[in-house]
Length: 111
Length: 117
Image (cartoon, rainbow over all chains, first blue to last red; front, side, top):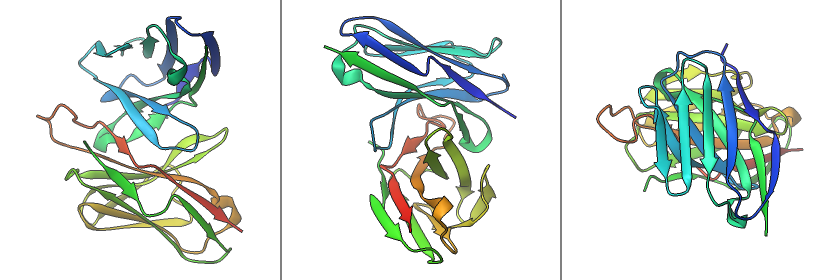
């Protein structure tokens, strides 16, 4: 059964820092990997989607990489801002688009 | 932009009631999903559907059923609500279009916080 682990569980950084969130998964037979952001009490917002044939995706200050063979993905956030404070979720996709989620990393960026 | 809407943001029901949670997407997506999210347990898949009238069990289907009569609408039904079904319920949809840039990218609704008393 696929298991997804995210490290660290929580992270607090000063504004302006570059930071890395980690995601690992146990079964490399995935279709894609998706990173989400969730604000308290809200739904999930898709940040980046990496198909299994890709190595990385970029959107603005966000960059996500995927290494299927080692079962790892990282989300890099450049020049963090207080508005980046949220929970970041990693999810791996299999058939029919089903996702298995990690527990998330709670990010706090303080001014 | 893809839009996934859910019928209620907050819902309070009594034990034993039949509860309907509705989800509608406007992007002609083939796949639709229902998850629940609980502290310490994360998001868990309840049911999903890959076509009209088709449904498949997810990881935690017990106590739930679903209905998909139209492509854009996916309903989650709690036949007899219990207190352990108090949770945040999230609906999502994704496309099976292999040629699309958003192939299998999952888009979520705002969630329904259900409290069963």
